Amino acid sequence: MFEYVKLKNFKSLGNVEFNLLDKNGVPKKLVLVYGENGIGKSNLASSFFMLSETLRTMDVRDIMQSILSETPERMSNENFSRFLKMRYKDIETLIKENKTVNSEDSMILEFGFRINGKSGKYIIETNDYQIIHEHLEFTLLRNRGVYFDISPEKITINPKIFYDKSAYQEIKSSCVKFWGKHSLLSILLHESDDKADEYISEQISENFDCILEFLSRISCKIKFGSRQERSIIGLPPEIFAEFDNGEIEIDKEFQLDQTEKMLNKFFKLTYRDIERAYYKRTKEENVIHYQLMLTKNISGKRREIDFSLESTGTQSLIQLLPFMLVVVKGSVTIIDEFDTGIHDLLVQNLVTSLFNELEGQLIMTTHNTLLMESKSIPKECIYVINELNNEYKEIQCITHYDSKIHQNTNIRDQYMLGKYMGIPEISHINFSDLLDSLTTKS
Picture 1 (spheres, rainbow, N blue to C red):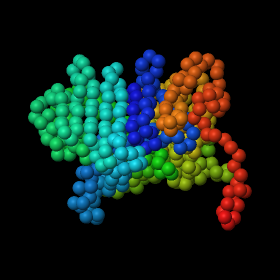
Picture 2: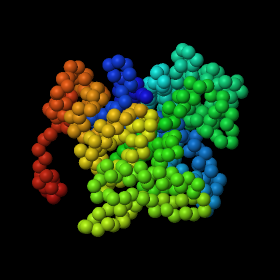
Picture 3: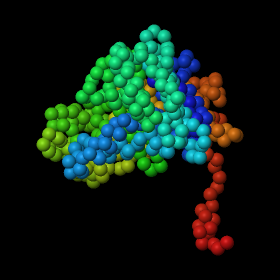
């Protein structure tokens, strides 16, 4: 789980710290982030997405090389699918998307984390084009130490994180070749996932392997304007990344059957008019192409509906489902605007149900103030982003503003009254005047 996040020159967040520890110093399993529109909630969530994306840049490199070496007709379905989903996000693209506009200073992301009761931190710093500093600390054998500290001037990698010296030399050599355009973590994950050479993965120490597993299982669903970005890495085989449509190897058809059962249970608990969910399947060589279908009672008749024709809210719900399942299984999940298109009461039911079963950590931004009234969600889970007088932002738990909140206090009422700030300034909008400004000559 994450203990804290510190950001400098990241999008609209010039210098902020996001503390995720409770009063006993334990990472919170559920965090709800509120704030007015445009204050930086999505930007905060995007910091986790960028971390996740920096781990994949070596994979992007491989896919691009594969595409350039293959004619379009010969490109495999797997490579083409990955090609579309990766969106060519190399380090320079990620920096351009995330570094504060016109900032001359470095962009710095620092993540404090806890794995198996042990704390560590990871720092990545960039200029306008590439990584200029990367640092990782965690338990080496018994005590906490530096795993690596890398800059253009010096590469320091602790040999203790590998069982064999030749693995250490191989990674150091790759670091000299690729670092800057790729993080060392991206290089390591790429090397350890290489099916043709399992040597590196076998030589990584147990504690380092725990770090790589933790980071590679981060799941993010982030909103950039009207576009959704999804980053689910390391899904367990029983959970699809796409429940609505996709393809699966023919010898794994039983997973489709199991998913159908799960979706039928889910829809019966969330929708009254859906009688059945099933997959329309098309078999082609060794692959099954699947498309989610629903049987619904419409105007007194049972009708078969392609899921792609369903409402925005229902489609949003199915897109959220894999993220909700992986956080129950133990991963860290970040969801931006959890409530988009979904009824307030259903959102409240989903989040309170999740809270009771969380094995991982769920960090979500939301505008749903009904969640503040839930007796099941501790007040310590509620955060607000505010802008200070010096135009810097702060992210604080509501207990920062009132350390002795009574259990019967209506947090929603207090929030709407401005006690914790984070609400828009309300003023009358004269729409007739706006129209007149379009037609009246100055």
